[in-house]
Length: 262
Image 1 (cartoon, rainbow, N blue to C red):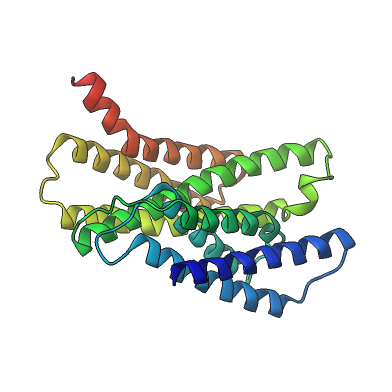
Image 2 (spheres, rainbow, N blue to C red):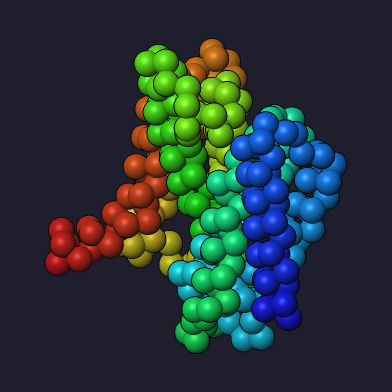
């Protein structure tokens, strides 16, 4: 069933991207209700496919391509929700083909190594992966904002600048992604404290410490944006700082254990 739903979702994504791309080149507008409806079908089919691939009959499959498909599902869902409030429809032209590719890879390259863990631990792992993925997207989005701002200052309005939404819209989308990532990161930290009895072990202590540092940085950024209107370069710096702390949480503990403490 995962193959059928995956292929159906893939075709929907590609069809929407081609339809929107053709309309964009011709200077025409697409019917928003049809776009939203077909996207909704594609996202739900994608959800079924990725759920069956990641959570088969036994254990949990965290293969690279399966997790990548999960990440793109979250991005597509967030983009679909944002479309009700922000004019971000043109991003489908970029995101949907990449999502289709992620589905194709997840179906073509399956992993036979499933982890046998409790439901609680598997949920913690998935939430952590989603949090890390969304906040990685937020960092990329912050970098894109910096490039977009520089291109606007230099009066470059062709190519890439014609496809992506206006700067203010991209900035709003950044903070929506940050809020979603922050919620998932909070759930990841709380579930880590609840479900792991061996938190005192060195590698878990490092992960939790840097995850909490990242949480604090993102919390300050979101507070500053809400209270003082932080944006532009300041928002980019704080978003990058939070991402660095998160990178240390996921990869820094391995470095400390294998190199510094060996």
